Image (cartoon, rainbow, N blue to C red):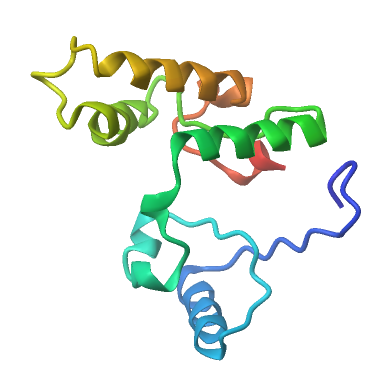
Length: 144
């Protein structure tokens, strides 16, 4: 049970095939009890994006608000970010954050449109687990 949480959390780590089978069964039934998915992007790549919540509709503000709510409820920053020396933070900046605000990376690096991107990153970093600077990848301990 999470500290301060009134319900038991049933974490069920699985290999890729059983995880996908269960998820597909719940999707086909139109009902399920899976509340949070955690997987590598390769595991998610076999999914039809229309089967899950519209990931393109999740805004940085929503992610920041969700992370802040978790922090407020638990007293700890739980949002994880692979910001270690060999982490994939550069992929996030180049492949997601910059493109979301500037529609480019190289020619728009020093543009006015890049400023709000870094402001959002500052807000996100304020609710990010401080241990993130030690991780090159995320693992379950960071979230528990």
